[in-house]
Length: 435
Image 1 (cartoon, one colour):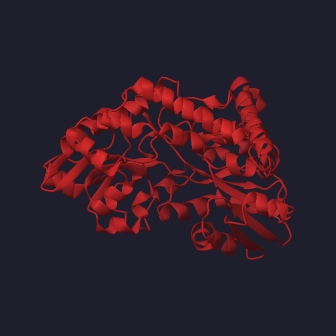
Image 2 (tube, rainbow, N blue to C red):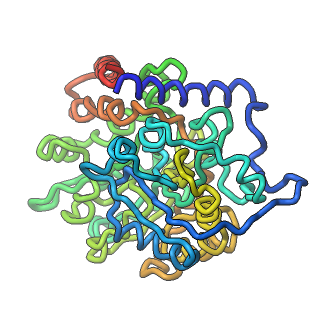
Image 3 (cartoon, rainbow, N blue to C red):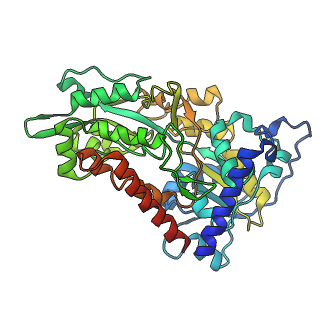
């Protein structure tokens, strides 16, 4: 395991160094701009195996991707292998199992394909086929270039996500507070939180709940410095993020609620308990069936006043060729289809965030969903912040960075003391992964 982590970390670090020090390490993002005539050959029928460490069931995979792929490519057969005990990346590799396509979120790509040597640079195939990446949201491409090694394209983004601010209209109406609106700052939202954090009868209401706050932070702060492989929490920007948590708990009602429940108000409190007025969460949270009982709407994610036009980071899902695939041409056909206007439009209609910038595709967003009358397009309101560099250490380091939040909110520790404690915990987490 030590060798795997060091190998993967070296690969990610090399990519970041090359991308940051020499723009010449990578070709232009617009592969379709080459003057050479794209060459496309008809590939023979093949059996393609698709794998992800996401844990998605076959039914979920088919609903989002598989059914459309099979319909588009009836000449091929497909097997999706769900990650579970006995079918993880190392299990499949040890068993000699063929894998043609890997797909992972931006957070898991380094921990999956890259950690086990399955990454494959698709740059030449993309160029030969005239894949026009100028259509794709640039921050999604940049993230893979940094992650994959000096501008290499180990995968293309197929599905996107981000965060936005949901609100419960009934709570705002109950207390006579005006609804949130697009374009608010964190100061605006935290002021609303103060007004709405109150006790009514036996119910303790919280004004604001948070989810995926660090992962999608609009300051583009990484968990780990990819060059030194050390915790990045000493960056002054992290103080700004923790101060949001501290300001949330300025009222005694909010403090009491956090102390009683020993957690920051979350999606369950918002959806099931209905005692949280606003929830900053992933932009697909409303697809949770329990949302049907809420009188809700959404607005754009709050921005920091220092960066008024920069929204949150996005959280894309990538599809890439496996290095061990013997059917790369056929697999590339599938990936190219998944970034086409045809597929992206259908994705958008179903309420999933597309990865391409084509206006017609964005205009189709959520048209075939029960949410067409909601302000779900708030997810597109601001430009995305650059995606922070990802490393294989992010999971345990994020846990370390969250370990002192409750104490901070309750006033049981000061920020500097908490930062030192969290940095020490993160150092230990990284060291443990390197063993």
